[in-house]
Image (cartoon, rainbow, N blue to C red):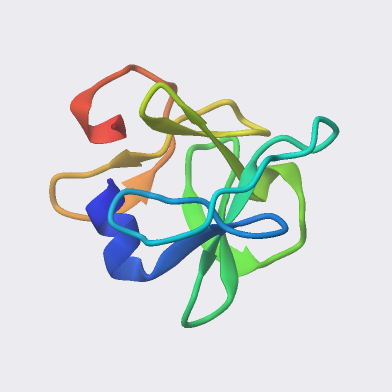
Length: 105
């Protein structure tokens, strides 16, 4: 998963950035009122977004909870859906229910 995000040029942002695997970044604290960080694709400045169907895509950054992700036990969990970012063996990502599997870590 981190390799997929790193290849896509994603960095986490919310008043700064946090480290994601191989991405060099600076750590910041999330505010209590707005947990999670936005993952910003650095070439397009679009944010990683998700929906309740488990689809993952990029949209213009809007600060909404569907664009916020938290790090929970080696996984990235969407704030709005509570689903975890997962990778397919053929490439690409989606966000099903969290299962602790290797593709979610």
